[in-house]
Image 1 (tube, chains in turn red, purple):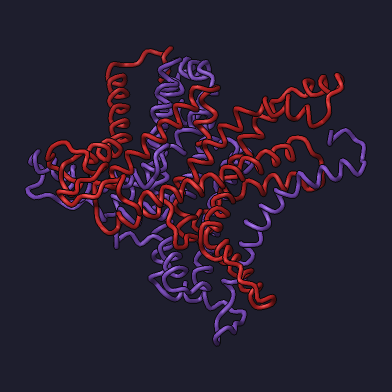
Image 2: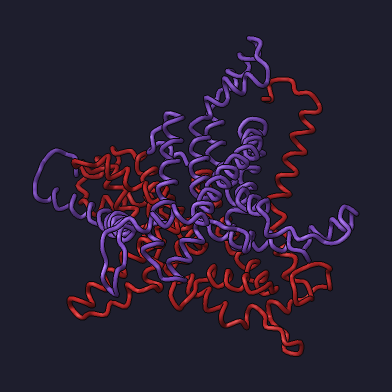
Amino acid sequence: MIPSLPRPAWLRFGTAFYLGAFLVFLFLPLVVVAVFAFNDAPYPAPPWHGFTLDWFIGNEARGRTGLFGDEEILGSIWTSFTVASWVTALSVAVGTVNSFLIERARFPGKPALSLLMLAPLVIPGVILGISILAFASRIAQFADDVFGLELEFLRPGLPLVVAGQFSYIVAIATLTISARLKRFDRTLEEAAYNLGASRAAVLWTITLPYLRPALIGSAAISFLMSFENFNTTLMLVGADSPLTIMMYGRMREGASPVLNAVSLFLMVASALLALTLMRGGPRREGAAAA
Amino acid sequence: MLDSGTSGWRNRLMLGLLLAPALVWLFALIVLPHLDLALLSFRERIAPREYRLSLAQYRIFFSEPLYWHIFVRTAALSALATLLTLLIAFPVAWTIAKLARGRASSLLFVVCLIPFWVSETVRTLGWMILLRESGVLPGLLVKLGITDVPVELLYRDGTILVGLVYTSLLFMVVPLVSSLESLDNALIEAAYNLGGNGWSVLRQIVIPHAAPGITAGCIVVFMLTLGNYLTPNLLGGKNSQWFTEQIYAQFIIRFNWEQGAAFGFLLLLLSTTMVWLGLKLSGQRFGEVMRRA
């Protein structure tokens, strides 16, 4: 079972076979999605009709709209991008403050509060979505009844989507950043104080640079999780659909190779993000937190 | 700094500033919305804009067989998916943690993570292209002479399970690898020297040591599976009968929020009970398990 013990040939062979089958299982769905983005047929299914780029650049002569001409999809990519940027900025900022709160501050009720911070991770996304939807519209109703105010941002729409995704992504950012802050050597800060540095200067020149890898890693993960979120978003979405919601709607209507083209675009984008991350810093933590 | 012991107003102001975002987040987005959801589920509409406290929503759930059938079915299939994920992921995690060494191990680990950088929507699209009647696998089965005509592989319970296990693998492999890596090989060698065999070593040495990782993986996978909407809905079609679809239907389609809130609460209750049970059975603490996952 371990390398230092003799393993019979059948077990070695079995392990290799199992691993091979597992990798096929993992990559097969992604490979077919990529391959059928280039099939010259209006439906992403075999047989192979030859190579084409129509599903990316379109082909007017044959009445095909490609990814780059599909306003609806391009719009939804932009929507997802906007939402993900907000969620990332908020999650990293609040996550950093939370880490200092957990690792540095002392106050009554701290164990309970740090436990409560983990709660969003075990609440199903659909329920996070409906609870925020119901609560927001109760407040909106209240504001309307009592003050005659119409609070548009509390109705289903992008501000609520940002709030819903933020509500659990910030928990992940907090975990990632506080794990690194925990390992920080406090004597570095003390040395800086002894040398006459101000609080702000120490934070800016010593502590935050040390946290940088965790900040970048949690930003990438927040962005990715927001971009790919479906369950919470589904409950809170208004007129503007983010990409996952748009793709879901199209997939229910029927298949089109344009969806394969968007998917390939997404795969390349997340691969690039993963590669950039892997170039900086020790790998396992960031990847594992995804 | 904050914990230096001096209790000046500056320190209190600092603490207040640090606490504010966390409190706003936890109360405005987690605690109060869930309390509100609970209140919502305990009321009944008796006239337009007039409500009273009642258990009607929960009574409907228990008196309407369709609803609790779907509830039980969702729970059972989620448990089955969790078990299958564990069985499939364990040998892979073992290979990464124990058999492969150095670069091969890291490489294998990264390769296993790659598909999960891609959106669940994309992965589900892949399975749909593979499994639908005109898709890749039914065509292959005909070519191989296993079936005469292409069979529809979508819209079956098995399909939903495949999709759910696929989506969940990452959340099982990662905690398993991290708990198996800390197991000292010498313990396994010693167990064999003392006359243990593969099965007894697994049961008495490996599983007890990996218990935290197994618990963490199972809790997260069960919770995610139970709350999944996309995979059962697209791969199961009309036959999926997943409980989250009932919540969606009540909230978004029928606009019956009271009923939807009750359904949501029941799902949350089930999910929380299973998490608690998992922790209890393996004697784990919630905080540690979540940090591991």
